[in-house]
Length: 291
Image 1 (cartoon, rainbow, N blue to C red):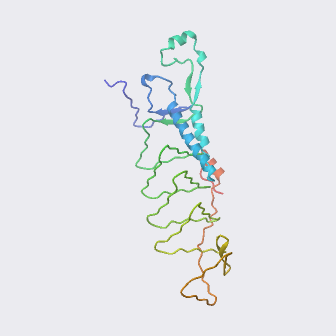
Image 2 (image 1 turned 180 degrees about the vertical axis):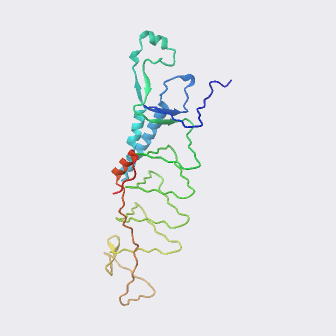
Image 3 (image 1 turned 60 degrees about the vertical axis):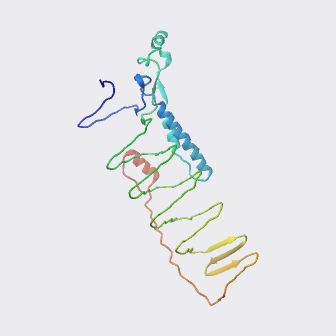
């Protein structure tokens, strides 16, 4: 009674599925076995939509001086490689065409869908899940692209740690960036270069229960409207093109005084992954190469 309603492929030992020119695993149905076995239209349309979203946001990021999404080129290639055919419609004779007019396949003749490269495509109209009580791993010799029409959520019971060989660029088009720590410090360091903080409107620094300290080894300059306060080399200069207004219950002018402030020591690590060698090692299955 259930014949034709499902299948199971199982073994108590090992198993493998190999397809030298590409493999398509999908839960998109073809009722009555209609259509080509490698008709990737739903998967290809999803990839195309993901590429359009990624490309649009990449251009927007570049327009705002952030890094572009260079991996979109590989995403576009994935969609293009999923759209190919072999054979030709001219292979069907007039009699073949008339007899095949009501049939769902060409019996090995004519034109059929295929992949341009040996991709492994997974596609589903309802969703795809992967789960394990242990670890999961993704390894790429080149790029990893993630594109979603709505949200990306990451929840971890412990830490979220990223180690990056070159640049980290975060770009938000509309609603801003929030970075909160309910407990513990928030630390930001540029260990071998400068740091810039720029805003079109106000910049506010507040300590609700502590104090604000600004230390610099070579000088501090506060400037606005032509007036400025410069602290440098043990001297304090207060200059302005207009009025300098000093008010207080008392004014105390004494002799010289100074305060030494300990500067944090920044690490000088030089063990840097060579990107070109690292990519070659990853694609070849070798170990990590360091310069």
